[in-house]
Amino acid sequence: MKVERFIVVGENIHCTRIYKVGGQFVKADAGGRFAVHYRDGGRAAQLAVPEVFLKTADWENGKVKHCAVGIWQGLYGEREAGAAYIRALARQQEAAGAAYLDINVDEFSTDAEEKRRVMQWTVATVQEAVRIPVSIDSSNTAILQAGLEACDPGRGRPMVNSVSLERADAIDVAAAFQAVVIASAAGEKGLPASQEERMANIERLLGRLKAAGFEDRRLHVDPLVFPISTDGQNGRRFLDTVREVRRRYGPAVHIVAGLSNVSFGMPNRKLINQVFAWLAVEAGADGGIVDPLQINAEILSKLDTQSEAFRLARALLLGEDEFGVEYIQAARDGRI
Image 1 (cartoon, helix red, strand yellow):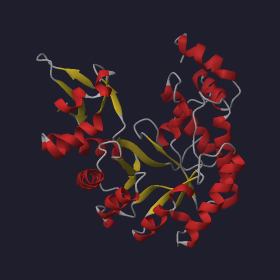
Image 2 (image 1 turned 45 degrees about the horizontal axis):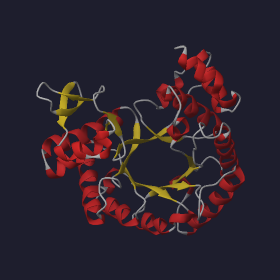
Image 3 (image 1 turned 30 degrees about the vertical axis):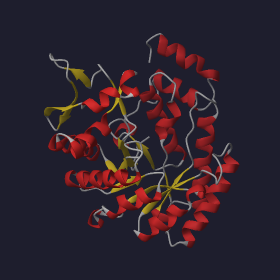
Image 4 (image 1 turned 180 degrees about the vertical axis):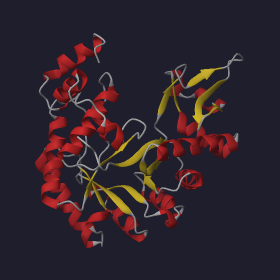
């Protein structure tokens, strides 16, 4: 299948993102000082991990939130080094085909005012590096507004990630800044368990958005992805909902989702995520909140749909491989 268009909302500038301490990206030098190793264009670079991160529970568990390290350094420590890291993450995603860059700083701090400053600094720093618009991602409308205030309207409408029935106040914020929105299928008091609940929530939410002046082309519907490790039918339910959204609302609305959620708890997540994105496009989706270095239109177009790996992942995602027995065995055998 030739994927002509896939709207990538790059997910990599997010304060929950982690690297393994002692792994490929976070290493100690001869003096025992840890740094995040990365490439900025063709140049090797390092970002020191400050002392404050060495005292966290994450570090004790062998993990570090690398985006948070970059932001902390940019604001409070080695400022140019921190800003350079965030700019490099932005440039990598733009070069890989991202249409928007999602920015989330909710877990950087528990202080609301600090998070506002952090969001505005991060948006400004990203915009120094790329020309594409950003997606402001937060569960707090004050943080959404802070991010939108920092957006340069000259690069196109910013995105709000996300609005839903339980976060209806975000609709007014998005409307005030003429943003496009990711419209989540979440309900007022919880997540939907079935396709019918998803569609009912989407119908109510889109009604509110259209009443607020949002045209179809500004709507990116998110039917919500849940892990197949908790329910083997979650992949099929999502894909069926994508088909129904496309049938009911036509070609003008967009359909996106956090596609990598499907693979939590499974081996070889990259394979699952890529095959799931392919299946989502086949069903009618035209985008995703993904890592563009792993999922974009070119990568999806080049997937070998006749391979054993594709066949096994597809069966897993469609609920045909009960409990993922065949897929997991293939991963253990090193066949995928």
